[in-house]
Image 1 (tube, rainbow, N blue to C red):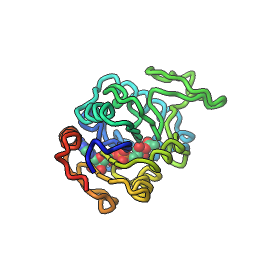
Image 2: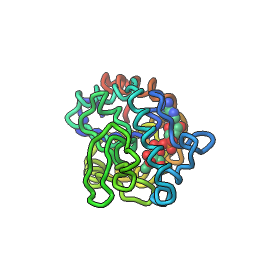
Image 3: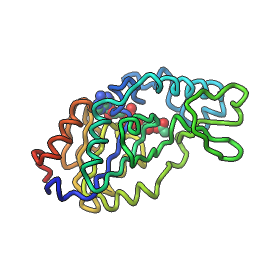
Image 4: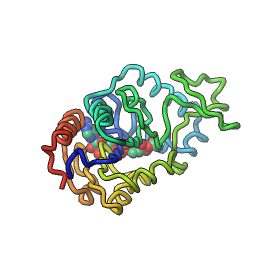
Length: 233
Ligand code: OAD
């Protein structure tokens, strides 16, 4: 398949794409996320047990977001979107680096750091500021915690059903349903390519698996793709 024949690229990104911007991935060598057990800060049970800790944790993440910038991988995807009829970018990341790099058609399946949700009414508000202590029992991060429903399931299913190229970038492929998207894309005959620092449990399902740092391998890949020097099939 030639680049000019591609009608719809679906991209799934995970924490690895933002690592070189300075945002820690979830599964470090020590298995902790910014020194916390993931379940402590990313589950409804963790929130019930210690809401103050969870609120402070996400307040700190929101602050951190102000210090970081999109890297070459985010920018390469934004540039790629401009060159194809359609690109659907599904991210598991709660940061806004894809948008800041210029990507337009972005869906955050695990929510967004800069959105908070009213616990009683469900109202969602955009904010880059901390949730203050008096609001701890009214507002929570609009983030999908373990055991909660993902967001944008319909758009994800639709994209997976009609993409002709599926790129999976910087995710350990440990968390479902995100990790299962490749099977939907394979079902419709899409070419599936994984770009990640290392092998993942699902690497063997992909037509190609490219290993390295996202900031280098993603721009290299998108350039080769656009100039037809990457052998898709
Ligand atoms: P993980 O932390 O599980 O995986 C990050 C992946 O990126 C690993 O496979 C790393 O090898 C790879 N990686 C690290 N640095 C990289 C770099 N510079 N370039 C390329 N790859 C690199 O993160 P996710 O797969 O995104 O959910 O985790 C999925 C979900 O688990 C998250 O969205 C989060 C967490 O629970 C929620 O918070 C709801």
